[in-house]
Image (cartoon, rainbow, N blue to C red; front, top):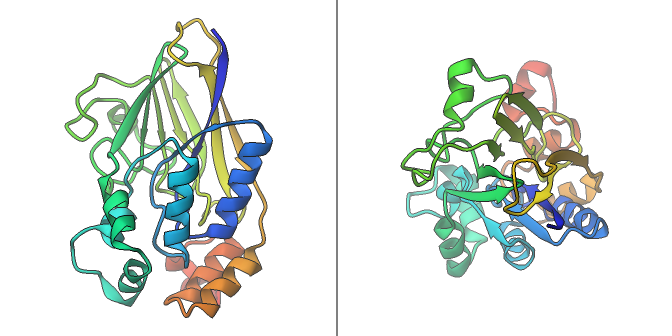
Amino acid sequence: MERQRLAVVSDVHGNLTAYEAVLADIAERGITRVINLGDVVGKGPRGAACTALTRERCEAAVRGNWEVFVAGQGEPDGEGQAWWRSELSVEDRRWLIGVPGSLDLEFSGRRVRLLHASPIDEFTRVHREPDEETFAMMFEPTPFTGDAGRADVVVYGDIHDSYLAAQPGATLVNVGSVGNPLDEPTPSYAILEGVAGGEAAAPFGVQFVRVPYDIEAEIAVARQLGMPEAEAWAIELRTGIYRGRHEALGLR
């Protein structure tokens, strides 16, 4: 059977400049299958455009916590969330909140589970180097993932920090962030390579890719549109440092 490559992107956060750069890199590699792991919107200025691009270019997507914040029915929490919601159409919101919480694929005989944050829900965060109990939990089926059986590979986003951790029969992959990387300023995505379906003896691989883009152009758009929290956004994009640390580090 023929090998395939699947690009997995996450946490675009309305950063259209970065998203277009990453999708162009994916296309230049001849990869036609793309899955988005959520947080398409929120934090950045062009959530509607990123939603349209996701629907055009991705074969599937899962729901992130920012989809719930911005596209869900709850009241927006503050000026920022209200602004990001107002930028979306009713149809954008319907689609964003309606995608599933997780997806399972069979790749080289492995059950690959794709989700935003964890098999518990869109909000339960799992950072790099999880403890043994948390690592094991990531592979177990839950009501949120549909009780489909234990996963062999789990691919997720949410923490904006790409890494891979492996134990026998369990590979945990975080693809990082396209639009708001917080491990370094350069957008990250992952490529899975294997045989769709296939046998466990078939080759299987994971590759991380970093794609530079015009950060200052994206910051300029946020300012031109009058986006709330634009200055915190600018510092995050330039430094790759979470805004909760800016004051302590003296970043302005």
